[in-house]
Image (cartoon, rainbow, N blue to C red):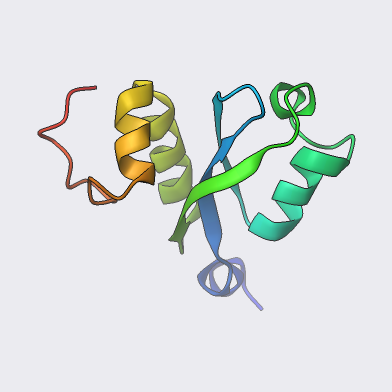
Length: 103
């Protein structure tokens, strides 16, 4: 199997976790269930969530291309908390239909 065939089969996820202190963590993974478990239970979780456990999944988006997922992750990380909350609550559409909401 070629690399491009593997990539087309794989799924990538951008996700938002809410930590015990109310802060958000935004990440990217190819196995959402495993990664959330790592954040909450293992030493492989990000340091940020490790000291703010438990972390609860609040939102996720699925991508076919890792580069697109990474780009979206960086974009959401740049948003203010209020805009992230609107995305979580479904008040704005995902995937670039939110230009009217200030960063």
